[in-house]
Image 1 (tube, helix red, strand yellow):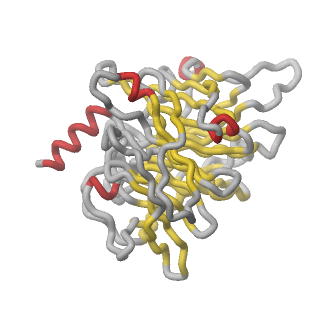
Image 2 (cartoon, helix red, strand yellow):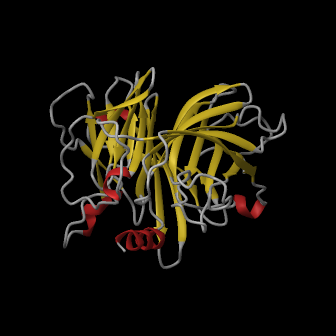
Image 3 (cartoon, one colour):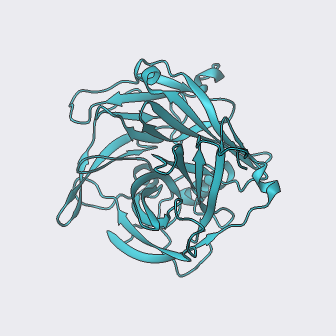
Length: 359
């Protein structure tokens, strides 16, 4: 009954929400269909940007909700990390919010349109375990949300039981270690904290809650999402360093750093209108390190664009002509009413003479 109640809450809120399903084998590989969506000029009106923007593709990855033969555990992608770009493909690591690491490939935006788009991709799922090598179980343990690479593996943040673990790559697979000790979770909602995680240029890490604390009589507190800056090798407890400012229903879902900018992905959902919104902000890294972020909205997505629960973000430099390549993925909440989408966009590329920004 508790699992059914939890599922109902997740579907109504359209937010990231882990389900207490039995774990699959530690390592599973399978193929899933990948379909490119054709968008109309009307759809593109839902893209707004502070500078030049070019939508390269929108892909839908099939899950068990669309293909019954697929593993139940694939979906719910709650974080996205760029791994490599080679030839016609780009490879990502991602998290499901049911306690799995997922690696998959997608078309390379730089060669998109030059070759026939692939119709499927291989997915490698790794079940997350505890330090005793036992698969994580129960909604309070498996709700993995933030992913950041290390020199030897990954750091992963969790909601509900707010914590960070470290995955260390070994010859036989990943070994789980307890991560850094963070404090300051008082007042954070179970499904509203430890949502985003990224590595900083100096080797330290930045973790952020989705929302601020839910304090009776102080609704403004929820708009201040605390963040932590920490050295993963330190044994000292780390308290919140500052806070990012949310607006309205928006909450932070992923975060990345490139050069001197912090990129923050936010998601909003209105349960009455059932409308999803997404926006991407950039903050000056120096201001974040000073504890007082200075941020501007870089990109906004809204209907009639293809909208869903966008929670994953990867940002890299565009090696062809400058600008940034942005990848955004959606968490389908393991619901047949939603989809697992992957967007590829180019931002801030120089505009060729006699042309305008797209779309």
